[in-house]
Image (cartoon, rainbow, N blue to C red; front, side, top):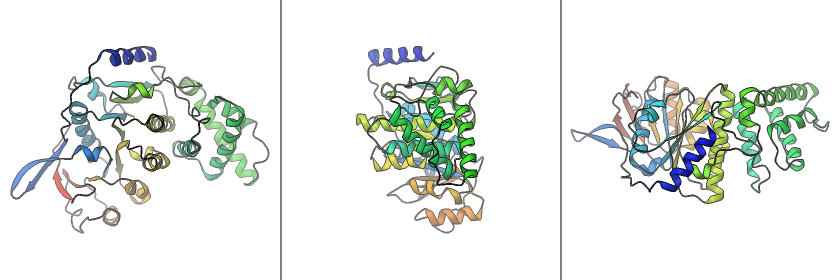
Length: 364
């Protein structure tokens, strides 16, 4: 299946003429101003930066994203890369509404592979920091586990030209005795947890995905297509791992190829994505656009709120969350969030004033 996919890409790249897009700004809902009801559109320039949709559970965060995506895929040259954990976005491909071909990359079913250690030998020293943080967020590693993992990877990358996860597992099992910064019990427990993770990643369906010297997803040839990343027979931790690795592959391509092709990374929810990746995108001026969602409670997720400059706030019931947003998003007035009913939203765009927008029911 992966070979058929590559053939399909080659054929499209060789025979398809460039499409002409209208770059129409997506309609989010309606707004009442001066006694008149009109459509409210978010200019595309804001999607080419970042946008975070916040709200309680079941308030329509994914529905707002789908509404935006349908318009973006059909009307613009901004290519979304959608991580679809639970097949929520099937209809984007199957409905026949789209006038553009959308590629589906299905891990666990169609023989797609990715090597987490693929960039270790390259010049960018920051890759190791990003990789360690991807392990942290995917597998909930503690400080001792992160320290040991980093030390083993440093040894591995000096010894092996094209390391794989199987190599990492072997090196972990033969770890040197020099790691004495923690107590014996802490080291023992950390090693046991790391071995369990690497064993799970190198057997069964996961082995077919990760056991390779070089992944077979050609990010460079995917720049002209919207993509949906899907999963089968893969647990939640491995899904997070793959999401972050795809994100990293895209950022690496942007950095090394100096690509100006606009994309939109769709992270629903955003908390699955490494903060180090988000920082890398910003500090390296890679300008990869991101649209994410974040559900209440917000207190422990301040780091994500602060990394986004454009926000859509849906219904929020908790007084604690309302106080948090008032404190952390500039220009929100004291009573605006308290009056926010189901179907209404507050839209705060960078360099623009806050707007109260009615978002109609949208089922897709």
